Image 1 (cartoon, rainbow, N blue to C red):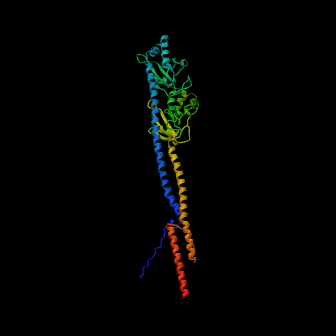
Image 2: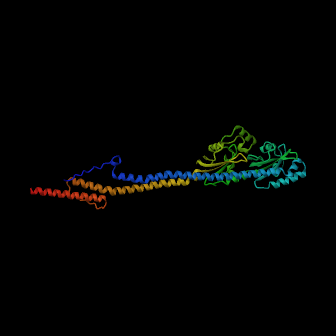
Image 3: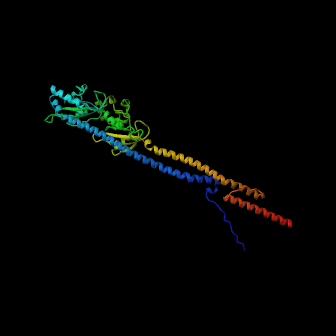
Length: 422
């Protein structure tokens, strides 16, 4: 008995089952190649960017702390100098005997010697009425400075007072003042000694941070009200910066009473003759108000691009030093990696598509040819030529169809022979 074997039909389920072979191959190739590349790019690029920003924040904090400390040391050094000067017998003697010609000559000689240092503009002695009676600079003499905080604080026995920067009424240049009272043997205030230093000393420290952490990096020194005192952007262009809002303007509106005080003092000359100008940097203002923020993203004075910033607060004066760098300076490697990744995905995708199309044609063309031959055979064209010479599965299919063709031809010949014999 002959065993009958049933042939199970091969069926496909789902949308892909009805697709042609070429689109299937193209989709499969692209999925296998593009999806892993895309996932790699989506994960690696943000991770690289975050790592670069973290490294950039560390770099910024290091430079910010270093410059902040340098400013601190600068202030402390000159404060110690003025306190030490206030204790010199030469000045004490002159303060007690201001009309003594010998005491005056000796004190003036000492003032000139002490003022012969870098960034010193003058050292002067002010009487208790607020009038400068002796100075290393003749232009200072007889100037009344009773409205200046450095005089007011020294008259309160505040030894080693450091003023906020201001524009000197004598030189019309930005300066910082250090003062101390001169006491007699009974502890009474007989005069005030003050030194006037060009603000260039602090500016040089801040300007040294230009591009220190990469392209576009600059520092910004702010007082406790957020008023700009120095900026690295002044490097090699101080004249332009002095006349702009990059100096003596606030990063946020200042309280009315503070503004009134600044204007009445003429603290920054023409820059604050009527009001304190505002050129807002909200992110920095928020960081100052929040106190515990050390690194943050912000806008800047010189570019619409977002910046990454680090801030430190001085202890000698309630000033804030902010160092900021364009985000692109830190993330350029990640941005380049993203561009390269997109380029690779596009190129590999194109090559994959070409390879898939070539392979699909290698497979589908002979299959289409065999399909046409099978149709011709089904219509009785048993001598249709099969011109496929391959060793793979398609070649085996072609040989199977050829054998079927030969079997059909033989069967028909036998049938014809039987009819002829009958």
